[in-house]
Amino acid sequence: MTQLHAAGASARHRLLAPWRRLPLVDRWMLGELIAPLIFGVAAFTAVSLSVGSVFELVRRVAESGLPLDVALQILVLELPSFLVLSFPMATLMASLLTYSKLSGNSELTALRSIGVPTWRMVVPAVALSLVMTLLTFAFNEAIVPRTLSQADATLNRAIGRAVAGEEKDDVLFSKFGRVEMPDGDSEKGLTHIFYARRFKQGVMEDVTLLDLSRSANRLLLRANQARWSDREAQWEFLDGQIIGVGGGSVESITTARFDRYLYPLGNQPIRVAKLPHDANEMTIGQARTAERLLRESGDAQAARKLRVRIQEKFSFPAVCLVFGLMGSSLGGRPHSRRSRSQGFGLTVLLIFGYYLVAFSFSSLGVKGTLQPVLSAWLPVLIGLGTALILLRQASR
Image 1: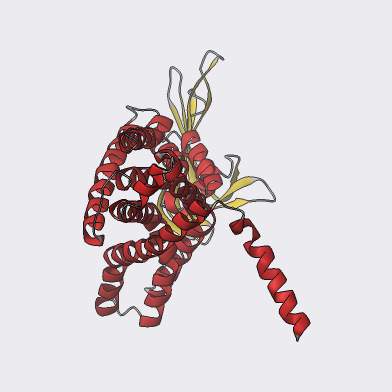
Image 2 (image 1 turned 180 degrees about the horizontal axis):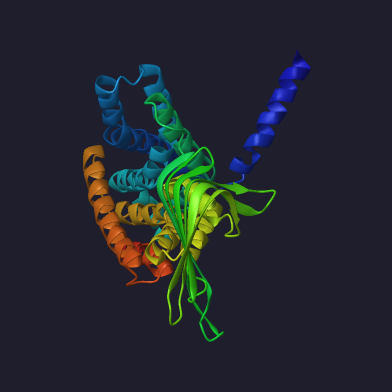
């Protein structure tokens, strides 16, 4: 028994060794930050979850007959997406309240009196903000896309729709390449337009394919069904009709019906059909693949929007750093003392102001006024600049 106690004590000592190597002032401030951080995560998650999910699920339970256990399962699956939203807000609230309390109790004044500069006092808040930044990125990349997809699939199964990702209406794909001209030359342009009224269980239904790759001989292919054949590496059209329109001095039209027709178009249409509807349900790798497919299909606006969302997947976690530095700089001002309610109110105002700016820049990026990188990162840079100005003012 004594050996077990000794082994346990040794293990605890090894775990706590990195913590004990930190300077005492850092351990003290981090200890002060943890409790309001946990409170902020809980409070903001509860509010956003209620507004964003609970009310809608209650309505579906009451009006659509959604089983209560399924509603609870969906709620649990959607929880990580709301936790991610609460991390930056909780970081701001924790740093603002903690440093306001320490300043109001003259504890920061005591540190200044022994020569500790203000920038050194905010180091623990910045370190905690960096941890929250990494945690937010990890959640956004590894957990949220999977749980949101599972939540959509669970809801769709419960209300009688097809599983998310296995059914989609109005699948449209445009392909660009070299168009053969009547004189034998070629130029870059639109070569194919593929449209299916519905994609279900790997099969395209009510399909129309327009082949524009040869300007002198254009084809229109209509079929009841089409499916991608991995063995043939071609599309297999079933039960349809093909119409050829020949150019020249005398226009000719040929028509033929078929039971089965193979056409070499590539598997991009089925990959487009399987794309998630929401960028939040994609990892960065999936979003980049989707952006490339949309760009190849000629949908420039959708591709540009997705490029903005990809950049925002990197810039959004950095908001934790902005808010942590901003909150500690505001709270660290001499004789700054705020109650929890005042801190919560100021936190809401700062959050509203920042996200108003961020959404404005995001819209400019989607419209093409700004480059995607600038639209996603300019709000972060503006926020960091503002936080550094506040830190400089607090140091005076």
